[in-house]
Image (cartoon, rainbow over all chains, first blue to last red; front, side, top):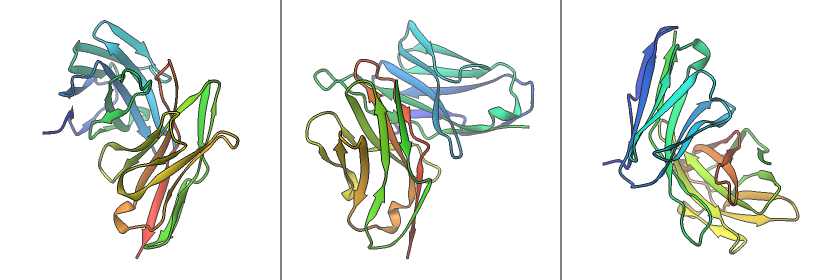
Length: 116
Length: 113
């Protein structure tokens, strides 16, 4: 089974609808992230969480909210979807390695969201 | 502040020829640098990372990268391309103590038979 899972994998919705994207992980990592990927723009950070009680905005958080329900679960919500939120969304996890000082991120398979 | 620039949006090679994907970075502090690969319809996977140990870093599938502080570069190379290397590649920089990585815009590697 995959270590980082995302549901749904594909979603088509209409402008103004509220939707939720879910992420679950079995890696036991404290840190979780939500990114969106647009062609030619790479990955941009929406929100990140370093533990259950810690939620932080990324560079493009407007129009999005998140919930960290447990160490293993991190959900992304679009309160009122708009067409320019059409993108590929990735969840990722990481663990700070003592003595290493860097994080390797582990990514889910992505959710392709289309807003009509 | 940190930033990363991938100098080519697309690189096209023939199977069996060398691969060079270029990445320059900017960082106020000692950086950690990563290369990730994204195959079609898949998530990103770590290829290799630099963490201030050896400047020449070897990764999976025959890829390697060299950290050059004087040139602020971290180019990815492979001696001989394989069809299965066709994918999107991302260079990533992270500053120690921050751990919020910054992604480059990606380079699409196309491998011709």
